[in-house]
Amino acid sequence: MSNNELKKNDIPQMLEISDVVQEAKEQKSFFFRHPIDCKPGQFTMVWIPGLDEKPMAVSYWKRNEFAFTSKAIGKFTNSLDKLKKGDKVGIRGPYGSCFSARQNSVVVGGGVGMASVSTLIDILKNPIIINGARSKDYLIYMKRYKNKNMVVATDDGSYGKKGFTTDILNEVLSNNKKIKIVYTCGQEMMMKKVFEICQRHKVECEASLERYMACGFGICGKCMINDKICCVDGPVFNSRQLNKLSEFGKFARLKSGRKVTIKEYHEMHA
Amino acid sequence: MLQTRLCNIRLKNPTILASGILGVTKESVDRIGKAGAGAVTLKSLCHEERKGFDNPTMFAYDGTFLNAVGLPGQGIDSAIRDFKRLDNLSVPVIGSIYGYRIEQFGQVAKKMASLNPSMIEVDISCPHMDYGKPYYADAGLTAKITKAVKKNAGRIPVSIKLSPNVYDIKEIAHAAEKSGANAITAINAASGMVIDIQARKPVLANKIGGVTGPALKPIAVRCVYEVYETVKIPIIGTGGVTYGKDAVEMIMAGATCVGIGSGIYYRGIGIFRKVCDEMTAWMKKNKVRNLNEIRGEGHK
Figure: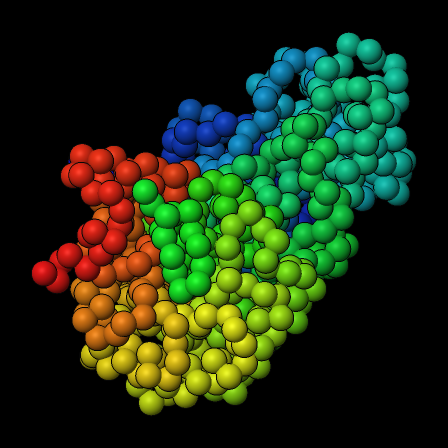
């Protein structure tokens, strides 16, 4: 027999949204009563028929239930934002590499980037969580992690400490020599700083990177970061890999394949 | 055993990454070369930057692969800055080009030639382009494009990539050869559609796309067979090659080299080495010393 069998996960399944939870301003979680075989940090491709399909990290994962958390910033996510319980979207995956989930860890999430590290937080033993956003209204998962060891930072000081997650990380690593690894997801400039701080403190780092994706299974070549295919080699990369990725924190490719600075990339996609 | 000569290019083996799969950046080209491909074809570039279609742009369904990516690309001018040159990589590179109008094919070819690729492939055959009359279905237009590219390609050999979506592929291949083409790439994707019965809508955002993967192979073998009977120039046989036996079949139909694209979905980037190992094993078992012994054997 040939191996040309269908990879079942690659066919979108039309799933009914079982619940919608407003997590914070412009950010909602969409729940599905459906089992999914998933590791922390992996993502699904979410399809709105007739519109578009985008990668979304799995942000809640239980037996027979999962969710993703989306921030309404563009054409696709604004349409998602209007969907209600009972509406259907196409789901395929999960895809990509995962976090190593080692103990004695710090998890740094910036804005909706918290969604990519949340299933990781759920399986770690007592991690230090650094949750940052531009202001109080944009902080997600505040109730979800209220009993955890969480430090909150906002750019404007409207909640928690005024300042950046990276400043807090620097303090935490200076005061706590037991920390072995830092997991992070958020704006790439933040993750770049997180990585640099980890290098200085000689602590391992794993970061979940974002690039424009189309296929999700390593064929189309749109999501290249240097020689790495973000959707299959990533999205989670470790220190050794990050060290070799000269484009990390500097360049990304647009939908057309043109290489631009990270700043331009975020402006084009916002 | 597998060493192959395509026009004036020496390949360590006859497997070539087909255009449209992964060949977007210099570093991915290098990676595919290191993974064992005999040559690598870039994703097609034209005179301007194109975003391509919205997602879904690619889907896998039972032994079928379906795509309508919409020829995204950074454009040849940006690519020249990005790639700088194409003759210093771990593997021979084939630059794939297209245009909207005939003269644009020539202009893009000239710019591509400045990067010094081993070959220029001309994509006249994308099955779902959003511009005018399809060039691939008309022998006269195919001849004009071939001449326009040849005039601008200098000493770099030119291959014309043909479509299966035509009444008579022999006529088109003949027109390309007569107009100076140095090779034929056969075939591009077959036009197709998949409707998701749960969503009750075509899966691809563009609705119509190109069928590739194992489902395309018998169509590709037939096309290569017919082209081989018509022209003397070498053929890059592309369409559904996934295993060594598929490559052997394609060569028996008359192909000099075999393109591999969607196969990466089924077997990963390691497919080039795997297909080569399987071909070598088949050749040893069947006492075939080199590929010339079996090339076109299906015609005898």
